[in-house]
Length: 85
Image 1 (cartoon, helix red, strand yellow):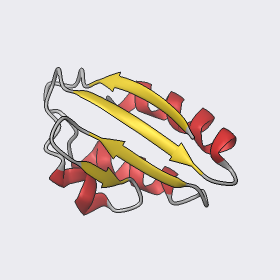
Image 2 (cartoon, one colour; image 1 turned 90 degrees about the vertical axis):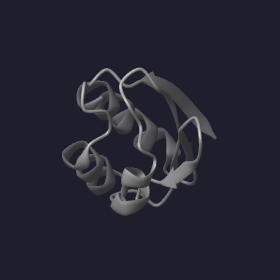
Image 3 (spheres, rainbow, N blue to C red; image 1 turned 180 degrees about the horizontal axis):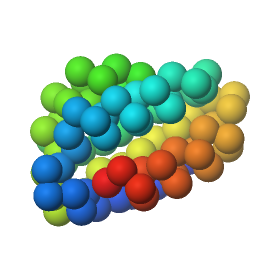
């Protein structure tokens, strides 16, 4: 399992556009990809689950990637998370 932590810097938090970008990217991989917030976790392949996190500016999120293509998925998603959050 590979994990990375991020602090949401966007004033709007994790909003619909960013959640959709993350969901589309995560769906390209076979690995299980989860985003953990301070209150709950969400499957990154489900945009509604991501939106339900309600992640706000300043909140710490942890991206967890586990599976057969975790190295490739984590590498790509790490860069994506830096640009969208």
